[in-house]
Image 1 (cartoon, helix red, strand yellow):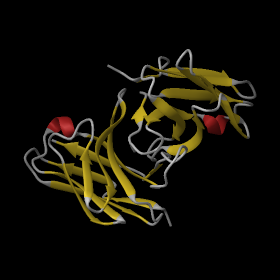
Image 2 (image 1 turned 120 degrees about the vertical axis):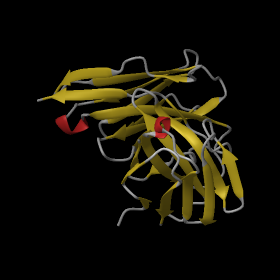
Image 3 (image 1 turned 90 degrees about the vertical axis):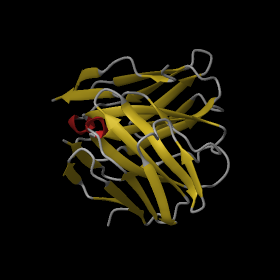
Image 4 (image 1 turned 45 degrees about the vertical axis):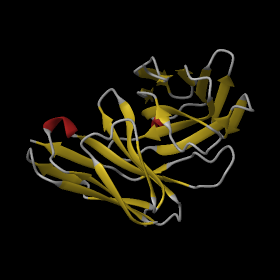
Length: 114
Length: 116
């Protein structure tokens, strides 16, 4: 049973518009959430994270929102750029860092069209 | 120079062969991980190590073994490779500091393994 779900395998957005990538989780013990970006032939690159004590974290064009009651988080990219085209993975962990395990979603492929 | 390196980057082998994938890091992190990625399945944890003397099985450890030779080196072995172990393999590291915001993992470039 998937604990971290990214239900949209792909998303296409026009350059300059907002990209919204969604992620749902089932384990209420998760307390730290991350987004990774992956280009072909490269390893995943850490993008942004949020702990369960917050509901929003912002870093430049990237903002992550966490809704604990709905067990849902989203990544907003504004404005989207062609270089943002990649696969985005949502990941979660439990135990305040002591567990060391990240559970990944299956990824969403974002295409930003010029 | 990359902080997390993996060798080889590509490998083609035959069923039944023993294969070792190597990972080195210069980040000074205590924790190291091995994942595999299959199309449409995201990343799944094979093994992880919190320090040189600590090795733990992940979600899909069957058919794999690991060795933590030093803080900076963590190798993954396939004792007798089979075709369904064809995948992308990633090594990752993280810091061992306590508290929240410490599970951020940093990935190597990956090894593409094909088992014929």
